[in-house]
Image (cartoon, rainbow, N blue to C red; front, side, top):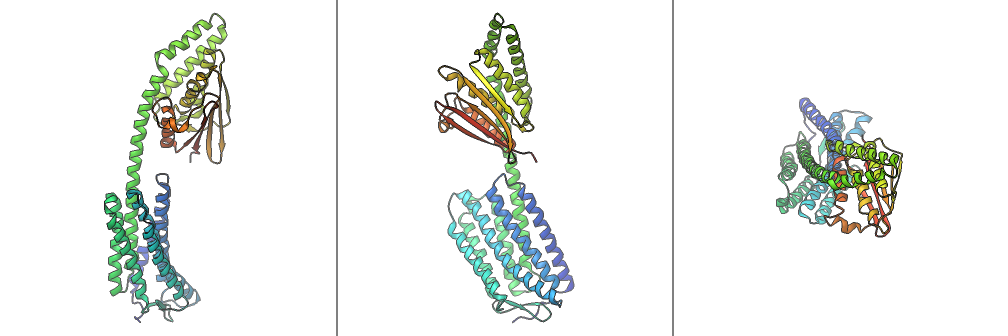
Length: 440
């Protein structure tokens, strides 16, 4: 049995302040990481669990240090509960750390390392069970009458299981080292090397909890690595968005403003003047509104108002209805209009419905229905037609008629975190639903 801990008041104060700041940093890190979950929800959740375990560990140790050496019922229970939590959350840090780092390896190496996780989980469970038993039958550590902590011979089991857990992670890292990025290698190495040296040092030099402090440092490095990786993803996402938008602007400009579209529309309006001047004038006004709306949106680099895009689409459908003697009809039920969406997204989908759906029927007639509503924190937009329909999977695999669908889906995801669901049946028609998260 070793003697009661002999930390000076200054050492206690320094450790409490250091660990308190570490806990505060961990809480802030958790809040920040939560905001990055869109990039990789599984990875983010794993890292949050890892840092949460470390935060609880630090807070527990601060309480344990603060009440050690104090007498009374309150100190009696707080010291014992806090110390038990220190060791239990220490094992939870190992378990959650392994889960987080192994998920990185599985993603990079495309292999399953389930057996490694099972071994680490087993070590963690054994350690937690030992600590729980110790609360009833002390064999790892105990407290004197003044509630001061001291080690018992069984304390070697804690050191052994901690070291074994870290060694297994090291073995896993070395086995898949080449599959990780530089940032990930640095984060994992820092999360292992600091605690490993601290474990060895503290086993022979009992005093300040170097293991806990080194674990806190490792968490900081892991957080830093995650944020650098997240920043790189943001930059990559922005480059992809800009590239896609540039290509889409060129494609849509060519598609919308090509001479034969203007010629056909104007020719139809010209001949319509002989039969129905008011309708022809209305169609000419709609064509002007359509072209103006299309050209205005070309200058937009971000999302546009749904209401503005819907006005342009109405103009387009009015021109098409006039050109084809009302063979093309449309219905609009817009209950929700106060939100943003990528430019040309609604316009592209509606024009696809007319050109590649309704106008290819025999006879070439049909209806486009547009609905918008708000539901469960999402702005929903539905575009439905009774055209010829198509095979959705085949359409995604080719660069022809339905490239507008693929590009719209990409822009929707990149620019506003939205999704697009496509349902289509050949000979029946197509239904597309856009879901856009409510702006925070």
